[in-house]
Length: 401
Image 1: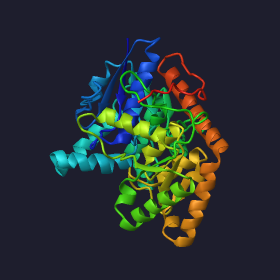
Image 2: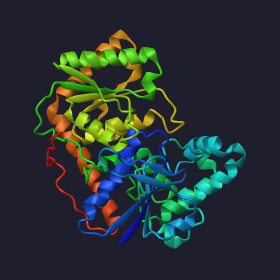
Image 3: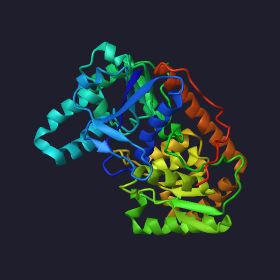
Image 4: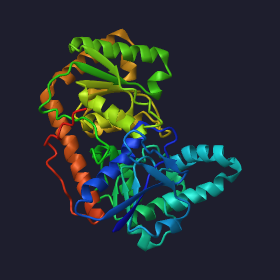
């Protein structure tokens, strides 16, 4: 039995996107357990979490990792997604939440704790050789982080000695190669959620874009960036309505990405994925809504700010980086262009052309799945498992709701 520790991010609000990231590793285990005996334990460094689903019986538990000795029982250690190796993440997110729990007077002790468990600062070379860093991002690191000697030494040692380092965006991948002092190494992977597939009791309705017929349904999902600004919310809804009218849609649905049933959180996620897959296209400002939508073959138009410094985990730039990485720039809409009549009209016209270009959408979707397949193959090999990779263009079985 191969025992895998999967260290992910703490999910303070049953965040739908973060749940799809955690569920993605469970789908990997389900897929590869057909030929391998695998046991995976989801961990985080902040608190115990239980996302067990009352409706389906699906279980998702994340245990608090308290010390490095707890990792010694595992054959492989996988750092999975989010910003787990960013010093800015340590200094902002972890500091804020830990300060609320125990007070800021203990923050330096907590940073020592975080460095020890997330960077494995005191681990021996043998433990580091069993580490895989997959799907995380460093784009919020600043020049201050680079100048921090402790951080540079820790991340350099971690990345140089790990079995595999695959980060989710090109800028992070470049940082990783530089930190490891090896620009020849390929460190570009994909977001973990691109590897999510239905498994066991976690199922949703899927359809291949190659064989789908229009449903005349348009979806939208707006999160933190838009909902806080009434003028932008109004312009964004106007944008959805204009596109829906021009595309002949008969139904506009709110995906309600942020609304999760606390009694059945995983079933709630599955319902959202089914809804995404049923739409002809989606308009959103949410990073992981975009990831999950494109994975399902539903083109997502993503709204984001053009002028912003990536200073924290909620940065707009992670969306722009995602769409640039997969050459989806025609499907990225800058906030600034929705706030004036002339540029609004141009955005609608440009987006309509992109949405009607079905051959290009099919090609882009296939390319995304090919990249995900390549990253999954490298992950499987690093875990010591034989890759089991179906043709990315083969449609998944359609599961009737």
